[in-house]
Length: 233
Length: 97
Image 1: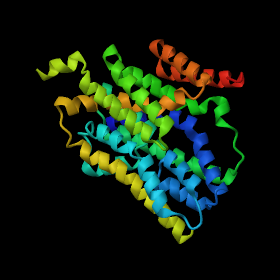
Image 2 (image 1 turned 90 degrees about the vertical axis):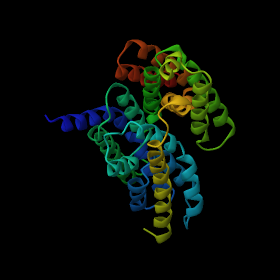
Image 3 (image 1 turned 180 degrees about the vertical axis):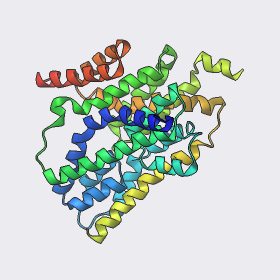
Image 4 (image 1 turned 60 degrees about the vertical axis):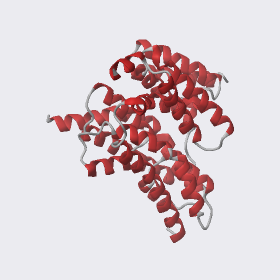
């Protein structure tokens, strides 16, 4: 097997379990969208062009006829601000990507494939083929789940009963542990968690991700790991 | 599909792509040493922690399951730790936690 094909397959295998666990939420999105008054075509069109779960659920919540496009655009921009941070972080690890590959990679960036990309970049160089394997799998499963959801309507079992909604938090716990092997990362994790929780408690939307992320980054500047200080000398 | 729905969806698509592409384009120009570098190195752990923090403290079932997943992750491969987290949250919820 060629190296490119192997990388692509690795990408598919890395993300497939998470996408399987996440399928019910695509189904629920499709069903919720139709219930809120979108046509099946509109729901599928939204999944194909917007491709951002939390923003799409928010849009379904705000949906009306005629659609309030200005409100929707603004709300979606705020919900998705975290992608600026995520994309900026992986862009530094994309030396092997052509500019057009970066533009395409940006389109399929989602929470779960971003997280797995960061993990991959820790152990080996990030390749376009690996990213394509993940991105394509994520995109196709979201579209398939949305489509089935619009057809199945409200006939969806509760994924919470099976703990499927906890797959992503559980994966992230493992990832944070692998990024933060030493105690030097503790202030970063603590600052991020505390600020994220406070922001989540008092501010609407997904500002808590941006606020917590920035707090963790500030903690890293104020309390640098000794190893990093040695690098700079 | 009505014209106003199509317009709203396309506005949402452009807004979303702007955040993803914006980050991608500025990322390459960020400094590779110094304090900005320290902050960026901490970004994955910081943002990941923030993303899941509310879900982890959502209830006692979630908090216990998160703790179990964390312990499992110290010893077991990732997929096993994830299954421990999902399985324990499902069981704890079934018991009404």
